[in-house]
Image (cartoon, rainbow, N blue to C red; front, side, top):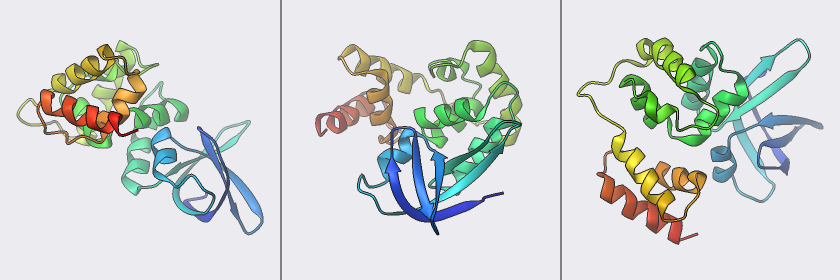
Length: 188
């Protein structure tokens, strides 16, 4: 199994990278978050790798941080969640936000993720809550949902709004989240 790779990026798309190491090009599926964090120009990159073996394919999934890889593998342990769904979940929100949503049992936040229905969100919460640890104090993600809806009502797409909110401090109140997100979106 391939655990990590350091090599030169020879092709970069929205969904995958081709990383060349010693004359071999590895196609590595990555989240949009990983794509946004690496330089647009070709160059060297280090990625933690999850090797997913199926009967008809061997797929590689890459992550910049080891905790992202661990969370991805925890998501794969949930029945009904495959690698593409797990990668999409990681691309939507920060690991801290996802941990809070799961720890507090906030299925309404998880169902906002495209492709995740109510039953799948409940399954994620039930199967991962013990592994993640239940959040204390009943922290709610309603403020983040409200900020997301406010940004969408201002004409931003859900993906643009989520990307901006990922860069905002999670402990900020709803109004502060909206202001900071608007600054980020205005700087594009």
